[in-house]
Image (cartoon, rainbow, N blue to C red; front, side, top):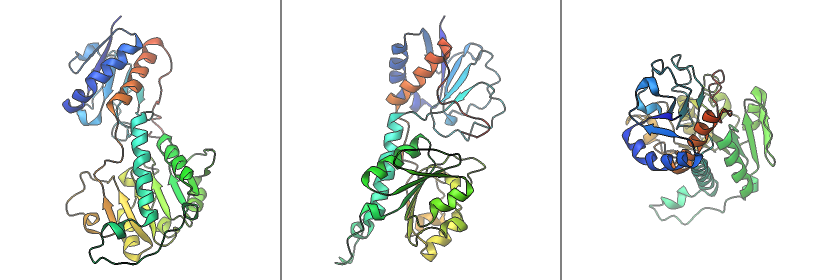
Length: 311
């Protein structure tokens, strides 16, 4: 039988995915039909992006699974009109590598104090060599696939890395902590903090005034995870006091970041427009195709979303 796959994403995504997804599905050997235009009563799988505008899944009587192209599922996980299995994109090698490069680059930027030399209009000949990486404690909040990959890369460079997650984890070469007390311990004395937690009610404002006070004075914050992980007002206060020396922010509560938001003008904030990592069509297509193959053959789907946990 032919498996019907609806591609529910904007036209530009279809343009990017059509060829690599077709190639990946062909490689599975299954008989399939892939299109942006399939009658709802025939659809069995939906390749999905929240930006597609699709929110009501009750009109798809044969639907077996929704396969999200995004790592974040906060815009769909609470949808009571979606009752079939939902998967998310967490094993895309391109997305992972992009995140590792972003985090490593900005961690080294802050570690080496590069900003003072890149922007030096007065031609100042001053400064001192930075400490070695082994003298700069780094904390990674969130030890999912992206967090683990970033923590390992930073540790390989020589940073002493502490990882924190809501539930216990074990990663060779990484000091791993969990729970409320573990968060305080993980943040105490940290000089660079990387946020890679999912956005859930439990993770909102993971970093607030109390947490910023635990950091080493002048610490750097790197947030390529989710905007709500940080209390914006508390961060601005910590920046103004010098408790936080720099913040590189790629994600925000409202995107695009409003033009009048204080982050734009703050001298210690770097705003990047949600570019830390993105799903790459070629590698993501292989993940999607494998899940379709699994669904067709009765094997367990990969990267299932835990509706209770929110990710």
